[in-house]
Image 1 (cartoon, rainbow, N blue to C red):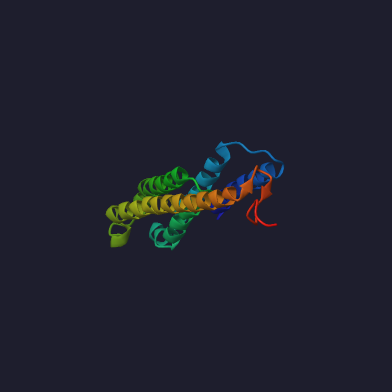
Image 2 (cartoon, rainbow, N blue to C red):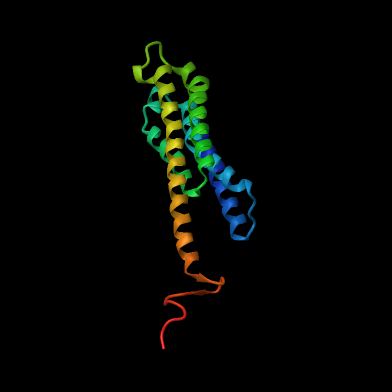
Length: 171
């Protein structure tokens, strides 16, 4: 109940104020980093809150792993490869810490094999790899944008006009 509602309330409050500041023209260089950290930490915050009140095995068996990787991959749209690597690393560390601190003490004597520590370490590594894949995607998008910008600038004339026809030809 209330733990999950509090977690969602924190996230929605942050997103509201982030949007409010951006709409009023307030931007600082730390804001994309903070936004990625909040986005990536959303799932562990919700799962951790749920794990405090629900069965640990049921919470860990939920399909949140897919969402965790997707949240790391979304960071690629910010087109900063280092930020994507940070997102994957933070997601991996949060996943591992959440398991050790919250779920492991609540596990039954014989948990499902896929919910033991070696499998959780593999999940964390996969989350890290989702950040690496997002960084590769961000790098590729940056390259494509640079090529497109070079093509536009090659047709630019003194920063003001685009040349459609060749200059100095005709009658």
